[in-house]
Length: 146
Ligand code: HEG
Image (cartoon, rainbow, N blue to C red; front, side, top):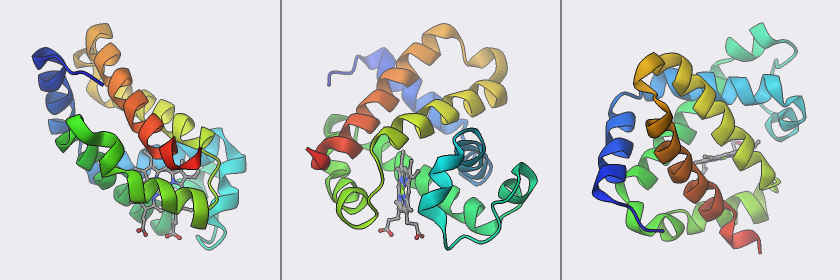
């Protein structure tokens, strides 16, 4: 994947506006509410019985932060996202047995949350670059499945 200087600065600028402790929990919570079958992977997380329960669940919040912190590694390693996520991809495939289509669903929910949090700063041009970035993340997280 090639990145122009302008794409690099857009991705860094979006990431600079992300508060991991807020956006992480909101994103994972959104995935679990919008796509309820994803709850099957989080059987040890306790009460996921309603949208309110999911958004108030501290394990969901913690794991959302973990996921977003891991996304930060891709932001800092744009030239080797695949290598950055090689082990994480293996873990999701072999140990966690997460269907890789779920990475796309999480990326989609993150985009919705960011659009809502950033308002007009999340312009179509910014979104286009951000989607390219998330697309690369999804491909990298799926890379050890095949
Ligand atoms: Mg995954 C664990 C990152 C999507 C389900 N995920 C983890 C961990 C990281 C991570 C860093 C901890 C790994 C470790 O313990 O060494 N996850 C991560 C990213 C993304 C993602 C960066 C997408 C951008 N994960 C994802 C999705 C699902 C999922 C979509 C399921 C719908 N992850 C999952 C589960 C665990 C992790 C079930 C283990 C959680 C636990 O038991 O604590």
